Figure 1 (cartoon, one colour):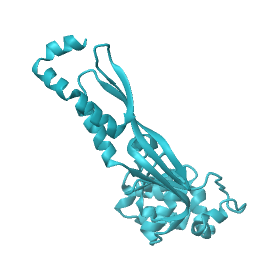
Figure 2 (cartoon, helix red, strand yellow; figure 1 turned 30 degrees about the horizontal axis):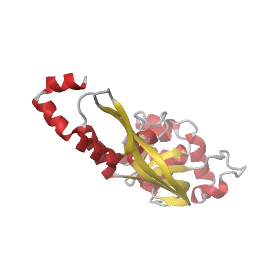
Figure 3 (cartoon, one colour; figure 1 turned 90 degrees about the vertical axis):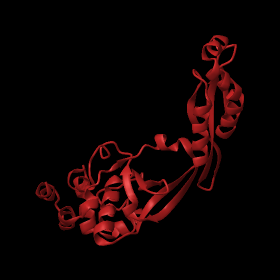
Figure 4 (spheres, helix red, strand yellow; figure 1 turned 30 degrees about the vertical axis):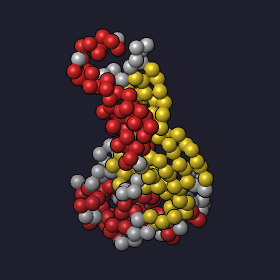
Length: 247
C-alpha cells in the first residue's frame, strides 16, 4: 500500500511524507456538516486573514474526502493534489502568504473562494481549501511548520445550557406531543460576530387537539414542564382515562 501511494506522488517532499508520516496520517478524515452541529450554536465569530495550527484540522465538509479516506491516501489519490504539491516544491512562499499569491498567474491554481475553516473549539474543519489544508497539515506534523495563514476561520460557540433545555423539553412531553427541532434565529450581526437565539416550535395536547407554540428554548422547557407536571402524574396513574379525555 505504501509503495503504491508513493508511486502516485510526483514531488520529493510528497514522497517523503507518504513514506515516513507517522500514525496520524492513517486516521480517517472526519465528516463535517454545519447544519447538523449548529442546532445549539449561539455565537459565530469570523476571523479574517488569520493563522491556524494545521495539526488541529480534523475533517472536511467535502463528501468526496470524508467517507473513509485517510490523510495519507488523500496526499496520494485526491484529485488535483499534485498541483498543490508542485507549488510547495516550486513556490513554497505561497504557503507562507496565500492571500497575496492566490491570483498569481505563475501559480496554476487560483481560488477566488479562498481558504476557509470552521473551529468548534476543539477541532478545525475545512470549508474551502481541502488540498492546501492537507499539505499544511503534513507540513505541520512532519516538518514542524505549525502556523499557517488562511483566509478566514469561523469560530463556533455552542450553548450546553440550550442543549440541556432541549433535552428537558423532550422529557416533559406527554405521549403524542412533539416539536420540529431546535431552530436558530439571528438576533445580531455586527463586525463579524453573529449571535443567535435558539427557539423551538412544539405541539401540546389539549381538549381541542394539539396546539402549536413557539418559544425560546429555555422558556419552552420551563413552560412545558409546568404545564405537564400534574398531567404526567395523572397519566402515570390513570393512563387509559387520560388518553380518553385528551382524545
